[in-house]
Length: 351
Length: 268
Image 1 (cartoon, one colour):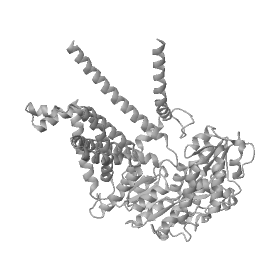
Image 2 (cartoon, one colour; image 1 turned 90 degrees about the horizontal axis):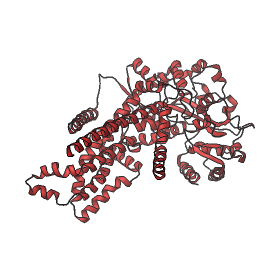
Image 3 (cartoon, rainbow over the protein chains, first blue to last red; image 1 turned 120 degrees about the vertical axis):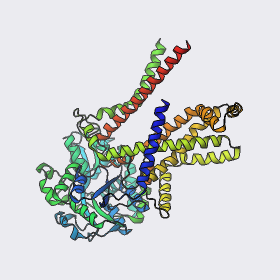
Image 4 (cartoon, rainbow over the protein chains, first blue to last red; image 1 turned 135 degrees about the horizontal axis):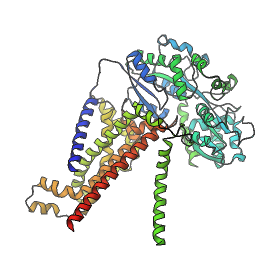
């Protein structure tokens, strides 16, 4: 027994010394360029990275993050050296303002012509110099048709006492505060303290009838029929409807949020050309199809859209109509007002 | 008689309460659909996917390697630190113990972010980037206090004069340490090792902030799946890890009961 333990110990020490020595130095293996990509977890087609590596003979180091804020903290510290990142709209605006991203040379991204014109020159990147859209979607209400007999076309239904404890809210600061602002008729990017306080009052009042503030668990809960309605992202709604045909998704008439995850090239990258190659590769029709097929969210690539099944294209959750998109707002960077939102969210969740 | 039944069923209830989530986890690793609540059919496909997924395999390798190495190094440093602290005078002992408690009481995010800032700062002087090595250092850092806290009670329980007695009987100080002190405190060292190992495997926040590009551990990989949903591939991985630990404990228990049997036979 002792001998086994000591031999394991010896092996472990040898391994550790070996790997840490190997990791300490800068390993340049066979002169291949190494591209470092930072993306959301489980947010790329299964073989896409491998295909890119094989096609361009570039090694890809692929890391994942859980949300925008945590990615921002990592990048801001200066300890990481990623080349490409895929944050969300408002975070990109913040990164542009704080000079954390490089301009993209669109001559190196010919596939950009396939991106839908509706998704170019958006508020967070006005002249479209820094980002290329990757995935997009909306925020709306998913409801169980067997439990909700009336038309769902307003955010007010989430405050209806008839559905006591049958409501799930999204455990996401900007989304939950945002839809409440929309319900009250304000912009979901407002910095007006009065409007924010009113939204706070509404959410605190609603807490009595809300079953819970949930994150990813909402999908399983709605599929199993644990509640009548929930606030969700459109991509999740598509998945839920497939698993439970009783579910339906709707974007209320007061308007909602249109969100984008876009690819950016980080400042201080040493591989601008390769980063642009990667972004161009992700916009290729077949590759974009693999991504949207695996992830389940909506693609901004027009040719890829043509490859999708007719059922999916008709699904308003996946691909809303132009009128529905017109009433949706894109999140903007709140800059200093983020403190007010933080304070209000703390007060709401603490009650 | 009735009392025994009540006692056993109470124990059964407590065990069920503790293990039910794990059982559900294991059952749903065989689920056909991606959903974690809706059972649609039996399949092994998530296990197949697990073996093909290089990201998860690499994360698992990193997790286990860092856990093992950081626990071992922390045990060595922690044991000697505990022996030293045990022999200190009151004032110095209090000061050092308060310093030891700091990483335990600090929220993980404070420890993680401050270590990251320190590593980046040091990185401007010497060629050290965030990566495997920095993550290892961070894990050793937060493991050492727990080892000290596990070994110190055992030292207090030990007879004060044991070391002196060993020296009197002719042992050199190193021999006395190796053959007399260490076996006495071995249970504390082992529990310190297991505690450090578990904490290291479990850790997310500190690992996330002190690692560099390309080095991910299991916690980071799983946590990053939060937005899009944790796939049953992770259920499959957890089931295998659970089965592995269960097997290990089973083997250890069988061996120690065999040893006990031999010892009893010898005595009688």
